[in-house]
Amino acid sequence: MKVASTVGAFGQIIANIVRLIAHCGYLVPLALYSRRKGVSKFEGQLLEDGLDAESARYLAQAYKDLGNVSNWVKHKS
Image 1: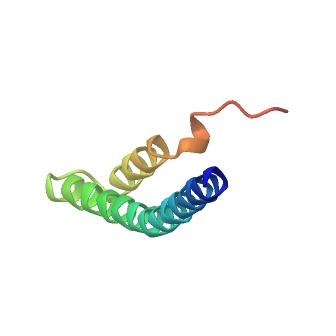
Image 2: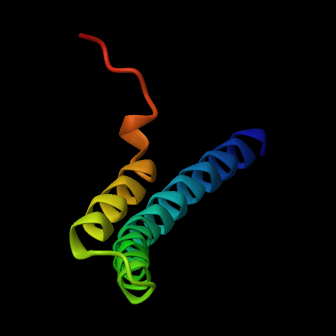
């Protein structure tokens, strides 16, 4: 009986890992889309507020770079 419960617990762990991977597979593209949409709205709002197009593009790119996680991590050279 103890072997069966161990196999059941292992199966539950595997099921939870698969569920987590599926959830991340859904959330990552959604987050990237939301980020792109947010950057676009930010730039549009800057233009609406009277900022020139070049400055608005520059600030929107800076805003986009702030959300880039790879910029937060030190890279080995």
